[in-house]
Image (cartoon, rainbow, N blue to C red; front, side, top):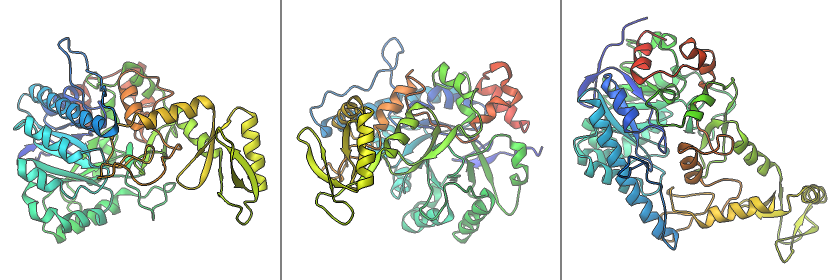
Length: 465
């Protein structure tokens, strides 16, 4: 395989291997510091990161506020404290090698406030900010203010063009690289547009080439592109290396970096990754962000699918075919269904799904009383972890609301991601992963359940495997 040559990234020549910055407590200071120590770019998550007590145990995110606004402020405070602590750990472990990035989701609650707080409290420890899940127009300005480099995550040349034209051209000296995240192959939230078919993956080469051509129009000939999503063996990408058509290219490893000794995910999660089969990771659109996301097909995802399948449209007055009254709620207030849908609803009720919950789309879903109670409790306990949440109807705007009904077809993402990151039930929590995760099972590097150190994985990647 071709040798990987260092590239100038965030002001220093480093190897073009990037640790993917996964969400809540899934990449931390220990994993990113170890990656940077090998001469690459380590990326810790700045999304509600862990801080620790005097015994080194993670401090749980606890909220005492009486309302969402108060809990939201508590979340911000705890997130900043955790992000600073992870930056300190990463800096110590990197020992002056490589580069360190913090990963922020632009659609998380108070993203700009949290990012500024982390950068303020960890000055000179962080070299770059990786940011996606939305269009982070203000990211370049924030990075320039703190003199760190920005790494916007996009899934098309069109998206980068919008960022550049609106804001990034003013701060071009702080553009570290552009991350192309493949919307069909990457784990976590995905940037599929409404015109793209989630069931038909596109070849990433033409899309990345289009991005490079767009960047060249803006004079960004030497600004690296990070290929993220679907990268496993570098030998499978050898024709991308030193390819004059593509220009400087880096490779990001998100899913493979989950399975190292330094990775903070629980041991049982690591073991589950070794057992996945092809097709076990699925795209879905249940996320309260409104984005598609890729996660392991487990009981949690099955429950969400079945909730939506037990769904009928209703009207509040007799309209068209909706002529049959159906009582919902404790007072059995009537709504109107079609004849067929009333039969379906009665069948669900007879099997225990007795609670009809309204959605923002004038539909009803049918769940058990226990599920309905838990859904309502999670909605009430919202702490504003997103800028706008479909599940709870929280918004960080002046009203504190999206103006829409809460959507019981979704879920509290903060609750489930905190749970799985800290030892929760793998079958009943959201488990993000890239679509190549099934390759752990067949890759000889992981034979007999072997889990490498970051150093061992990094050295393996450099061989092409």
